[in-house]
Image 1 (cartoon, helix red, strand yellow):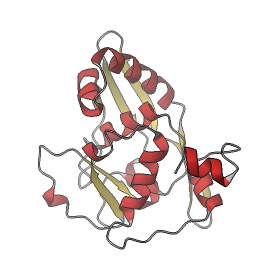
Image 2 (cartoon, rainbow, N blue to C red):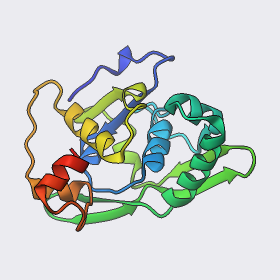
Image 3 (cartoon, helix red, strand yellow):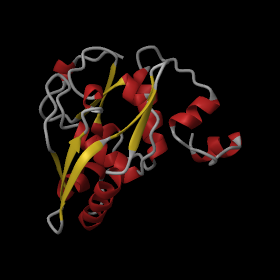
Image 4 (cartoon, rainbow, N blue to C red):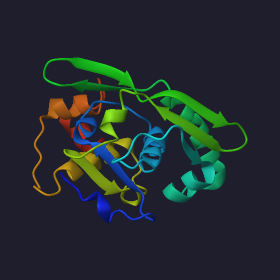
Length: 192
């Protein structure tokens, strides 16, 4: 999907990712996903990557409609565990694996996180001029599972065409479900 980036004003928080990143395989908790998307919404995809990107507990609380006292803990846990998370891509020739961030800082008691995206993730988030997906962050704020966010992003890619096809096994790999929800009825009930 090609989007006009000029339509995003300063008050709108947009998430823009390369379609290759949208289709990449990764597994995150809901709060890790929320933290990443809050950070990505601060990036102008036409410019170089800012380092670091800061997210505060009050902003996290307001964006996702969670109580402030829970936002502090969610932000702290998501920051810590995000450091260990990775992305898997396949370009038709090479299978690659790389981390989202190479450094995280959390101000204990201050409720502020600083994320430093790796050089490997940056091409999927900055200097984008084709094959990317953009949506307003508020569109996923009320989604309550990481699977629903991933599905939303996948479908946003094809908003203009209205058509997306993927095999069940391909979908399972994309979400890194492993042995979970092997029966289609469970997949349909719990994920879709």
